[in-house]
Length: 393
Ligand SMILES: *Cc1c(COP(=O)(O)O)cnc(C)c1O
Image (cartoon, rainbow, N blue to C red; front, side, top):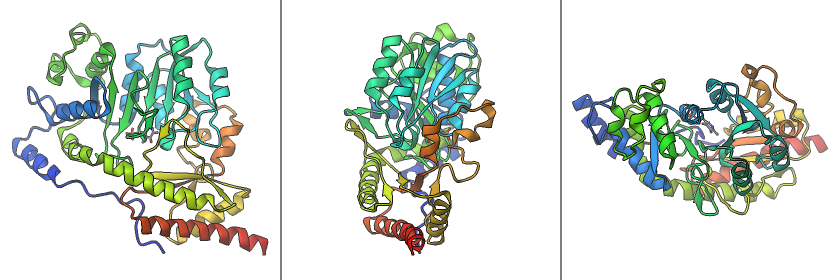
């Protein structure tokens, strides 16, 4: 029985206490109380510098960041936006919220976008592409970027689960016009809730800042020199989805820990992947060559399992303290596209569906020690053997 709870968070660095204490004393919880250097503004500056982007805007969630990014593109109503069919329900939701229509692209057994289907669906009526790097798996960004550039289609990256991942050495989130990240507790940096977008585009940042809720001349408190802000003042709706200074106080002291979390997460993941791949019943897809991952979970496929066997595996692992879920077998899973009933009719996507019916998801907190990773792996492997051998007997 595993003694460690795989859903338990890591404690917040001690420095946060001093930041929060100062906020409790001053009462300055609103980002626009102070004329400058509010904790949210400092977080934006630090995050932009960390990722190598010109601008950052911190907001209430990654979903809000995706919504604002789409709104900032000024697309016509019902514009078609390509998204992968393997993502979290919040992604098609952000598209719908922005009055656009998501077009779902098939995802392959390796959790990455099927490029043949992407090319086929990237027709002239597509007005934006939103790539969701689901569970931190990076699709072929060279091809995607080239196709978008050739057709002059704006590219947005949902990098909610990819903070620290690189592609040819470049930070994920800086390849598209906008990159959106999450600080929800299950992501690399835990703010409870929160999101941030990065961009180098003067118009996009000005539009996003104002729509996030920089009413009147509050855009002046962002400490960035972007002279396009003034032209949008009062020209755009205010969606008021700002970040509070309290969230920034919790998030900022975690930024210096990011590198350690990335390295430990990758070590844990790769160690487990190697051990799981030794089983003939499991397959962990390899990363793409240009990709350096920053995982805090692992995904792997069941080889030749029936639905019943997959259900038994989930039960066995859970009895030993490891929550293992097969995306498509866990009823109502928000990552299975057929459950996105708010879209109306969902398309038939046999390839993505087949993947979701056999792809397992296990959290792998970056705080796990090598011994704990081995214990989790042993539980998974013995649960698999129990299912497969009891069958053979
Ligand atoms: C978590 C997540 C989101 C949503 O992030 P929120 O900050 O909770 O809105 C979107 N996309 C992916 C890939 C995610 O992992």
